[in-house]
Image (cartoon, rainbow, N blue to C red; front, side, top):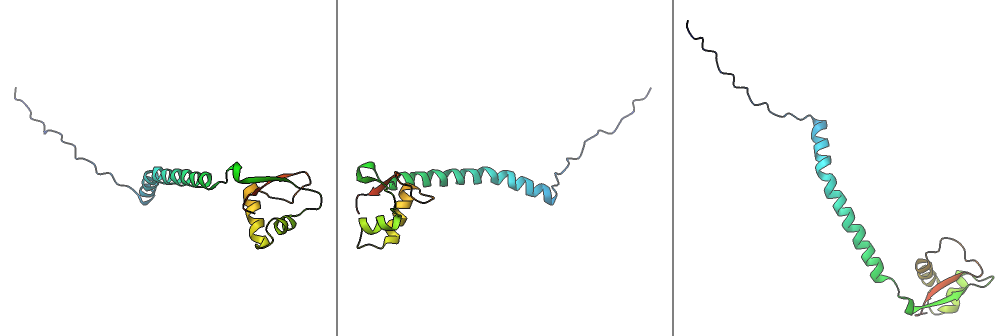
Length: 113
């Protein structure tokens, strides 16, 4: 009996081929952690800036709004030499006001006025 020699089988390594869509998906998945990290840094930096620029309670004067008072009249009473629009903007920003003043409402006024 004679021995039959079979050729050895050496599979050719296959090359990974990505389509345009596949490349986009891979790029998106690789960029996603970077984008999330940048957003986290931006949010924490803005929170730090907001907390460091926040006015402390010791430099605030609290007033109670009376009937008929408006931001404009408060601004004119508090700082007659300053532009009322600037004073109003600071009061609105400090108190996070989104609507008209209500009688009995307590609002903070910076002591500099």
